[in-house]
Image (cartoon, rainbow, N blue to C red):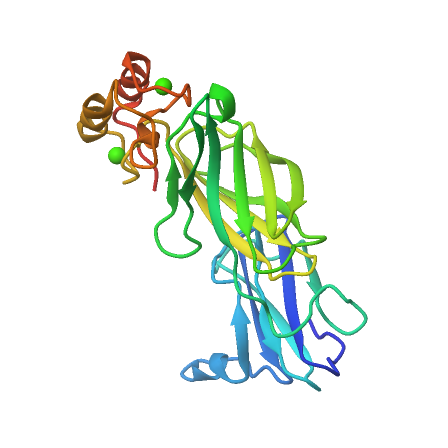
Length: 276
Ligand SMILES: [Ca+2]
Ligand SMILES: [Ca+2]
């Protein structure tokens, strides 16, 4: 795919979605030199950026220099599949699209936020790279599967939108049911989120860089190591009857505002569960 040239520097942000097989998108400046057998080094020639993850939907951003023609290569991730019979590609940030100023702004920080009844609001960090952060609490207000994700930028994320890009394992469920801009924050409501999965939240559009946030959902994983075991049960027991504060809030699994036998029972019932 060849876009129109960018006269000014731009923060270009392609979003690619496949209707069939997993794909990977790579951006090049001006010229793409296809690799050949025995000479694969050309895939780095004129390289600008790529989607980093393979899937049926991905978004990324990169700085496109002035007076540069953007070339996007959409590759089927796995050889031998039926081919990219259907995909869509959208690019924001180029000339005539005021949503993507250059250079690309810094990536946001992300947290999973919950109110613990009568005590206060506590956040679990969600790193954008490396192992996924884990939300171990069952849901907002103790309702399973409802969660609030807050992405914080250095400027208001006006016009940005969010969607669920992937589930791992693929049978996982959950979708975005609200997106709100408040100050420099993009507040995303999730509903119908099934337990024991890594959900990939993708944001795009608007006046900020797109972001991809992997979020682990594993009820009872109070130490956030992607598995529920006796260690988690012991931690909740040790903190039971004590205060819910910045150190202990993960043990208040049902966000009731207290740590007690109900939380211990939830973690015991979840023991043995894990996520990738
Ligand atoms: Ca654990
Ligand atoms: Ca509790």
